[in-house]
Image (tube, rainbow, N blue to C red):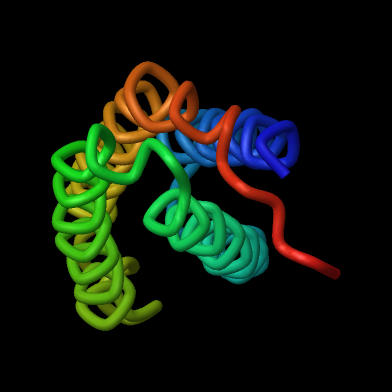
Amino acid sequence: MLMQLTRDHDALRGMMGEFAHIMRTRGPEALPDIARRRIAFSQLFRDHMGREDALVVALRSGSTAAQADSVMRDHSRAMVALFLRYSDHIKDWTPAQITQDWHGYRDAVLELQQGLLDRMTWEERHLHPLMVDAPRRAA
């Protein structure tokens, strides 16, 4: 499962890189492509969060739970904040709003992406190493 989280991170980074390229090189005419990419990104992000949560739950019941507690709390708080920020972003930036303020949308996307990139790097440094010894759940 940890390998899947790493693959998710790689895929999310790739999607964000492609999206950032579109934001920097195109304009509102890219809206149909952007809408498709937003949906695909949202689906992968949601699926990834579910997989990650399952491993965090396993960590909480494992032998290293006490040592990992502060990392898991930090992770949980940060993910809730990031998810809420992302949800607000989707609600605030409707296609009409994007067309009206392309540059504002681009800046908001790039800022949100940087937050997620920072979070994934943190997870890979602090959370993923703890998951190596997490108990496996029965399928």
